[in-house]
Amino acid sequence: MAEVGTSPESAAAGHAPAAAGARKLVIVGFMCAGKSRLGRLAAQRLGWRLADSDKLLEERFGEPIASFFAREGEQAFRDREQELVLELLAAPGPAIVPLGGGAVERRAVRDALAGHDVVHIEVGLEVAWERAHDSGRPLARDRERFAQLHAARRPLYESVAGVVLADGAEKTPAFVDALRRGSGGTRMVWSAQGYPVWVGAGVLDAAADLLPDHGRNFVVADENVLQLHGERIAGLAPAATLTVPSGEQHKTMAQAERLLRELAGAGMQRSDTIVAIGGGVVGDLGGFCAATYQRGVAIAHVPTTVVAQVDSAYGGKTGVDLPEGKNYVGAFHQPAAVLTDPTVLGTLPTQELAAGFAEIVKTALIAGGGMWEEVRGWPPLRDVVESDLVTMTRVIEACARTKLSVVAVDERDTGFRAALNLGHTFAHALESATGYGRWRHGDAVGLGLLVALRVSERVTGLDPAVRDDVARLLERQGLPRTFEGPPVAELLDHMARDKKRRGAQRNLVLLRSPGDVAVESEADEAALVEAIEELRA
Image (cartoon, rainbow, N blue to C red; front, top):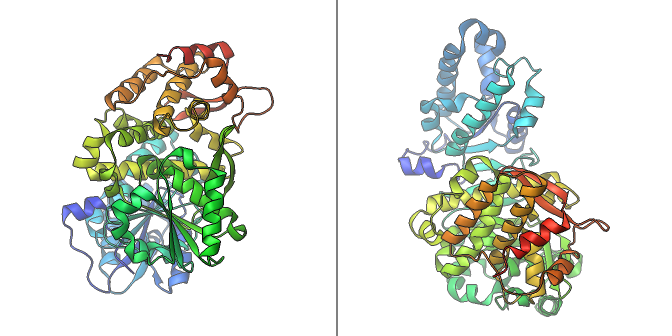
C-alpha cells in the first residue's frame, strides 16, 4: 500500500516511517463511529489480519472494558491500552487495527502511528451520543462531558490521520482501493457518495496516479490554466484536450454544445473520463457535459481557483447559465474524484484570490466553531497562500469536509443543502442582472453575505457583531462592500426566480449564529429592501 497515512504534522515532526512489511491500516475516531465494523470489512477486502484493540484488551483483562475501567480507573486503563497498541503497531506483517476512541490521547501512541496508514472516521456529536449513551460505556454517561471529549479529541484524530471518511460517508472499505493510489504528503477525504477528494501540494503532478481507472482521459481546461500548468498534467496523456475561455459569461448552452460535439468528434466513449481543470466555470460546464454526454460519463475535477477548491468542485452540482438565471440548466452528477492542489493558487491574481475568500467566509459561518474563529482573524489571502501553505491546505480541506457533510444528508438539494447558499440568493441575482460579466462570483457572494446577515439580525436575532466581523474581513481582502448597478426592483425580480423558491414565498438562507443556519426563512420584504439599499454606493 502506498504511503498516504502520514499527516502533515507527523511529517513535519520528522517521525521515522514504519519498518518495511510492518505497515498497518489503523482506524481512529470517536466512540460509536463504526471503527470495529469498518475494520472487519477492510480485513475481509484486503485479506489482512484484524487486530481490534478493544477486543484484544477485553481478552487480556478477562472481562469487559467497562468493568475494568470502573474498578481500576481511567489512568490504569490508558496505561494498558497504550501498551497493547504499541505492541500491535510494532508487530510484523500487515494488519487492520481499529483503536479505541481515546487511544490517541497518549503522545506515545500518536508518535507510533507515524508511518502507518491512519483513517479517521468522522461522526457528529448528536449521532455519537445517540449511539453511545445507553451502551454502558463509562465515558458516555454525562452529556456535557461527552461533548467536551468529542471536541477535544477531534484535533488529535486530525493530527494523525492521512485519510478521513467524511461525516455521513458510507462506512465501507471501498476507500481502500483509492488509498492504494496515494503518495506521501497528500490527504484523502472519502465522500458519502463514494469518491475520493485528494488534497495537498503535488496532487496536480500525481493526477495520473490518483485518478480511478475509467478508460481514456479527455481534458476540458480553462485556456489560461492550461498555459500555466499544462506541463504538470502531461502525465494524464489525454486522448484530446478541449479549452474553455475564462469567465462566467462563457458558461452557456452554446459552449456546452461545442464541447459535446468536440468530444463526439474525438471519439469519446462511455467508458472514458472527462477531466475538468480550472475554476468553477470549467467544473460546472465540464460536469454538465459529463452528465449528458451519452447519458453520462465519469468526471474528475481538478479545481484551480479558491472558489472551486473550497466549494464548487464537491457535491455533484453541474450547470450552465441562462439570461433568466444562474445555473438554470443542469444536473446532479457526482465526480469520480476531486484532485485539489493548493500550490496552483499562487499563480492567481490577487483580486481573484480575494474573491474566492468570500466562499471561505461563507463556509466558516456555516461550520461555526473553531473554523469561524480562525478565519475571522485571517490576513489578506495572498499572504496565507504565499507564506503558510499548511494552513491554507488545512482550511481548504475543512471547507471541503463541511460541504461534503451537508451534501451527505441532502444530495439532491431538497432541504438542508440550501444552507450552502448562504449569501448566494442576492449574489446570483446581481450576477444575472448584470449579464455575468461585471462581478466576480466571490465579489457578489461577499455582498450577498452582508445582505443575508443584515436580514438575519431582524428575522433570526443574529448578533450584529457577526456582520461587522464579515464586513471587516471583506475590507481586509479588498472586496467590495457596496455596489452600483441595477435598481432594487430589478434585483428583487431576479431573486424571485431563485431555483429554491417555493410558490409565492420569498425564502432566504439566514444565520442564527455561526454554525447555526436557518434554511428557508421567510424574509420580510421591507427588511430585504433595506439591507440591499444599505449597500448601494
